[in-house]
Image (cartoon, rainbow, N blue to C red; front, side, top):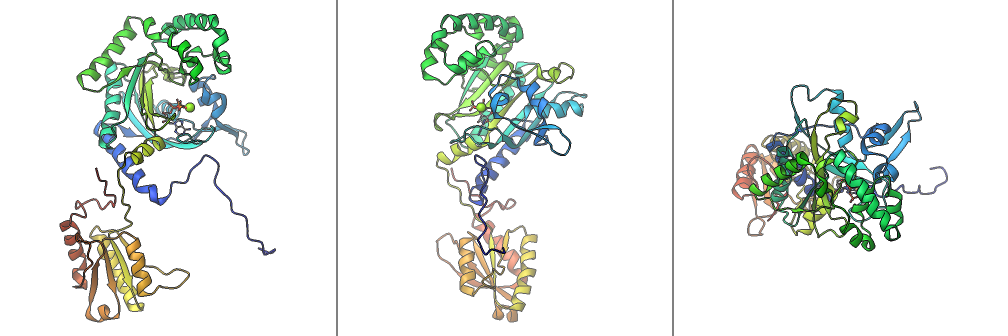
Length: 451
Ligand code: ATP
Ligand code: MG
């Protein structure tokens, strides 16, 4: 800098979070569990771009939705004038991709995705401008069976994560003509009580009256509770579909409540809708929302194709995992390699590779701006790394072709040091680690998740 002033720090975008290394074990545990559970139901991962053409969301989500009305990060690509949007959700993108690549030509598909979503909301606990979702989309399935399977899959995920405070609410919002009849009565009902409607509700009265049922305004709860219920308008087929879902859930011992006021934010939903909610996260208590969206593929120009899916809010779920009091001990590695002297450093590089060949995670001490580091400062780093062992190579070890292995986290809390033949260090450490139950023998993940 020519003017000798310290440059100002640039901070991240409001409402968009850095996920720091201290939280990485929690994210990894969650992501690994999700992947295992989805795979166990035969779901295949799909990755679509973060940016999509703006009309995809405008058409897919419906104009009178929170997202399209006020939450989208939309911009004009200054290079070519394209209208683009950072995806606020992934169903539209996944369905676009499925159509574009004709994924369902040989039968229905069970798909899942994960990644960041973007919504311009007021940042608060559990509500961010960049957040993450994991979701599943089952495309080409018409019956209540897949709806129930998606719900059961979620239940298994909560169980595997040790979460027991999440409860299920389900509802049916019927088909378009059933909603139309209900809508007429609903508007008439709200018209009669116009004086009790807030500004949001008045705005939605004719555009999207169903969303009024979703209001969080305490002053309107009595009014919406007494409003005409969609469930009473279901025709025979919709009713049978909903009964089918309930039947499978009951037989599978999945507890649920029917919430006749449950609707979904997006226009494309029909029939089954569901939410997983918890009381432990304050007002942002919905950790997962899903439902059937039979009309969407056709709205995007495809052949009529029934489909059903859900999306999990990852940040909210992780907060719940933290709140459940589970302990995460994020160790950086199994072994920290300490060395003193030029020849010892070269030996340390050789040994490091051998230990990694044996499946161990190894941090080799490297120089900082303060220099290569004294023995003492290297041992401090070894301790801080959370490694079970420090392996030390100094001049003596080089000349005797050995290494010193120091226990940093022995079962009895005591540290021991012993000299091991250089060529036997890997074998020795693997035995020690497996013997001490530090590891399960194949996955050296350092997250010891304690129930
Ligand atoms: P809400 O009523 O809380 O605004 P929504 O109906 O907009 O939720 P969906 O579009 O159904 O939410 O998204 C599915 C899940 O994604 C939500 O249940 C929630 O867990 C999570 N989610 C939605 N918006 C955010 C956000 N801004 N920040 C963090 N998580 C979010
Ligand atoms: Mg929202």
